[in-house]
Image (cartoon, rainbow, N blue to C red):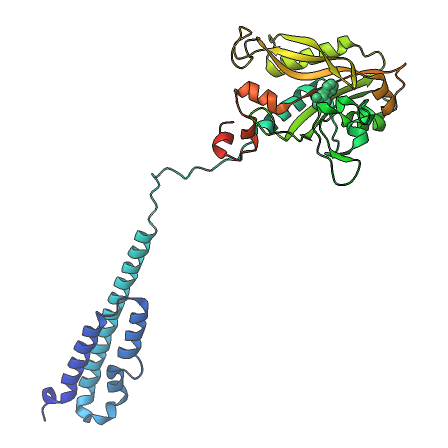
Length: 348
Ligand code: PHE
């Protein structure tokens, strides 16, 4: 039998062709691994030729060994090439999937913002702080005594009709209708020392909700108690406050009024900043906007707070941040503040 005719040599040729044909179907890492063990592994056709060398005629073995080695090297080279192709393809695919267009505009961050009432409150704190007033927090749930009686509004007195009150199921307890009960709390804590405080907080009134009134709203109370405090101090402090809050040139006026816990009592107006005093819808053609109630602390109230009214005097004022905010931003309905409508809130 001649060397060329020995079937093992054709078989080796066939082994190489078969293996290379299948290699093209290995298109991912798992396929490459499977092909390697099937065609170059210990039990693969080409490796079996090596391990069964003893079956061939002695003089043929060097040639068979040489050819088998060539097949093995050819398969290894083809494998390396295919593995590299797979690696490149997978990389390209990954890059395409993760494409980042750095020229696209970024996603805007949505920013929270302060509620317009909070903004007004903080401005009041700042202005009054500059004038030496400290924030004093009192409670929302009050006793009837603090909310009324100690403020010179006895039970059954018609003045109670000034406030429509939420009474708690617990007798003698109410939701405060104004921040004035905080006056008594501050006085009882500080007496006989002088006081300069502002009392901000939520107030509650059992009223029909409308564009002009809510059942819950903020007030900021001002209180100064000391020796020799006069109505001039009240006027000076409030005028200064209005100028710092609404502008240095704003005009103000005091009108006589009535509150049971102040004597004398007044209300302060600022010149309408919409029309400059000429008269418009916002000021109802009067040229003035009412922004707060005030007065000299009633002697009975000083006494209830622990101060001797023959020695001490004081002034108090109460303003509504909602009303001030509405005037400044020309908001025509108080209900927006509690509406939770971001389109409203985003304007501030
Ligand atoms: N407490 C009064 C009100 O709610 C306002 C006020 C406060 C008036 C302090 C005078 C002095 O109407």
